Image 1 (cartoon, rainbow, N blue to C red):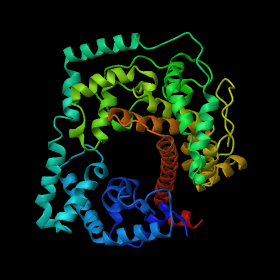
Image 2: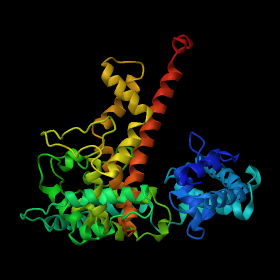
Image 3: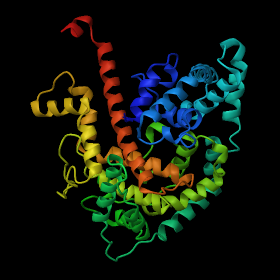
Image 4: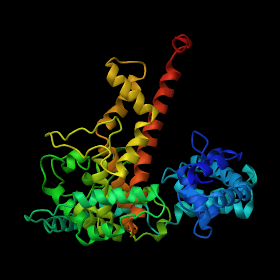
Amino acid sequence: MRRPRAAVLDEVWRGLDGLAPLSGPRGGPLRRTVKLVLDPLVIRPVQYPACAGPVLDADGIALLTARLHAAADDLRATAAWFTLLKQVRRASKITEGNPQDLYFQRCFELAATRGAPEPLRDRPAAEAALREIHDNPAGRTVAVLRAHLTDPARAAEVAALLATAWARRPLTDEPTPGHAAALHALLDACAAARLTDGADNGLATFDDLLDAHAGTHAGIELWQVVTGWTAAELGFTARPVPQQPAVGSSAATAQLGLPLDRTVYERVFTVLQGGTERADLPTVPELVAAEVARSCAPLALLDESLRLTATAGIALALGLAPAGATRPAPDGTPGTEPDATAAHRIVNGRWQREAYVLAARRLSVAGAPGPDAEPLAAIAADLSRPWRPYLRRLWVRLHGRDVRAAPVYDPDELWDLLDGVARSVMLDHRMRVKQMLSARAELETPAQRAG
């Protein structure tokens, strides 16, 4: 018997009680729960390879189930500690960082060492944990960033460095080598390797594209292309072509610019605001200096393997067809054919089965505004150009890896990133539709709901 690992994990998780703070709206574990708690601290697939891989055999299923049940008490205590830390966070008016990113692993540590918390007895321990997390990031804070870049002399120095780096970009008038066929072959192999045990995952093609600097060439081209699949049409910038980044002096999570329009301040802000283990990051001056170079590099990334991943992501994104057909660029340039590779077939097939996509498609065919039209309108805009939300989210993840010097080492890792971003966009859409429908239902009268 073989079953998808995610399905086994979800089923076992739902059989445990007291885990709501670590669970999603449908009762399964949050992605961050899997990433930060279950995989590294409970399941430990490196030590127990039978639990690794996207598909588990009977032994793997039994072992994963046993490890989760053995850790059930610690997981329940972790959930209770997370609830307590969030209460103390609100009382302390702390707004910095994502609580799940910052607290999940600390809560598991508290659960393993102290057991389940009692709100009154253990509140001082929760307060101490928050102080340690938020007051001791070794100077890697947004406040330090603000002080660093609002100093007039420092801001002028960074602006001068930006101007120099931008002027030294590796522009060329030589024709860009064509890598489309190789990129499609890589996507085909990456995805096919997940469907067939022992299939070639495209490592030779991956290495060839790295050696040919395919990602660098793609980034250089985006600085110069003004028609067709431009950086603006792909969703990287609001301008015709990317412009020299500004220094910046403030940022807000809800109002960040598009990836290639972000200021140096915004780019470093996102690293400090959302990152875990900030004490392991370079200092703020070092982060700023590196970001100056990164923001003026092709695709605003320094590592070649990450540029290649972004370029492969573009090749995948241009064939995304959640509503069943790709749309051309504004000048009529055609997109990649839907289902051009195994990767496209996997992602498009999954997306086209989403209930909200089917509803949006029915509305477009009917041509009449039904009761679901309004909450689906914002999603429909994303579905008409699905490459934009996909590539924006992919770039954010690659930027975070670039800052932490975490390259992509092989096609399997590349596919995990590309497929993970696709799932993330779909889940985000699903949640937005659910929230909009819920908000509308709350405003309806009983008579309207009955009708």
